[in-house]
Image 1: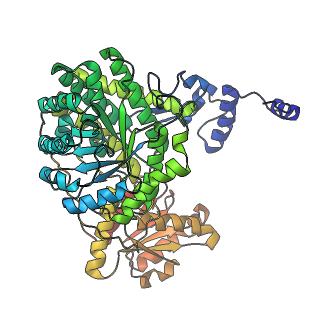
Image 2: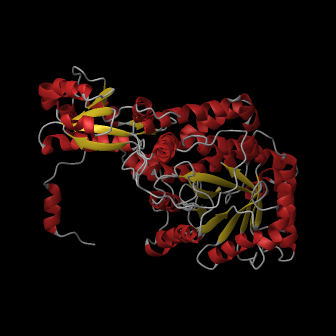
Image 3: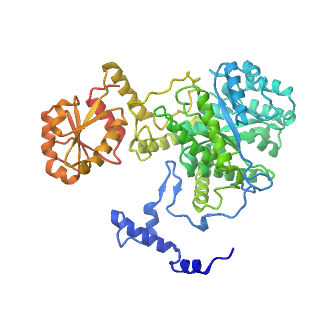
Length: 605
């Protein structure tokens, strides 16, 4: 294409894009906030903007062409996935999860999904889910040669596999899916070790009789659900995968056959770029394992991405539709082979027909309307994503080698090494959520105290006893539960009075901030002048205005509030004023503020 001369002249009028020039411009901005001075060396500027993920992955302020390694989608190290012809993504396997115990209800839901866009089925078997003996009824009418079936049977994997293989025998070798053997993941989730020998025997049967069927699932989501970050999840998943390779090859399978029997399951969340990088990084890591194992080319990691359970909320659950859409987009762009979108009401119980429809239509929108399946490696060449992929892979590899030095996955789990690392990452994330640095829409930000939650049939409980299962919203939702209980018992929610000072234009911003913060704990707010406090029915007040007005009126207003019966007076801002007990401000520990306020209002646990 010929570029018009006038466009060349326009481009020539701008200075060249150089790193030091960018640093100079950023330093000028940072000087205004006090984060830098005129004397701050240019080489330090990027460090002022760089940050790290909760598990230590560096996130730079600037990425350049040098951060994009050479390579093509579909070739070693398989960072960018493409179909064999290299002509773009083949789409992904739309995989819906079913956890009900009634085989007739599960069958009805499975058939409805398969008729409306779902291409494979993920079944929870055992425990409070389907009994292994119920698999024939639950799968009656499902064409096993067309719809892959993935089992998740925990400590009943052997029974479930036998029941499914008996069904598969009537279809023949065209059956595909995964038997879901994951004894190390079972140990991580429940504390009870499964059988590697059983997993190896199932893998051998799949290789012999059902070449399209896999036996092993490396479930990394257990580490994500325990509060781990991306590198935590990847390092542990690769360590478990290596343990399975040793078990499979030790039982007599060839290296390539062993690689072909393993599928990874990873969580993706609403942090779009980190989720894209995570999937790409896993393929890079697994390609390195294949290289040192002597495997042939074509042993790229098969990845099943699942929208995060930890990010889902019970409060304002409709926002979960947005979270899962972003996560599914990231999974598709990252090149996941299969994607599961959790229904928006998953935290409330078993999803209804509407929720499952929205979940599967999320795939359809991304594939058919957004055309994600028509582009080979959409993230490839993005300097930021390439750099983040590389840094995530390096951090995960460091963690993997630490697990290996500790004796491997099982030994690191038993010693507490894995649990301690996940707990440390969760503590950092939890603190960030409490300070609302990682906001949760509808929960820690913009809560709806008048919401009426949909009712759902209780879902089967997941087995416990191993690593904990956390949710990002748990601390705020616990506060909301206390408020609900108080409202049910007394007929009214706990209340805080926002005492506004000065004109509306002066106090509105901080009054809105304070209202949003207190409501995140289920605390109702009423607004008025300090003299209206006594009639408000509140026992706690918060002054809201500008720093200038505080300097002139805060002390007097605090006296009025105290005379009106206030047991505590907050101020929205960071200043110190006579008669004011404490401050609320952007970056404060909102959970601690809300805990304290509920206590002051007599709302006990």
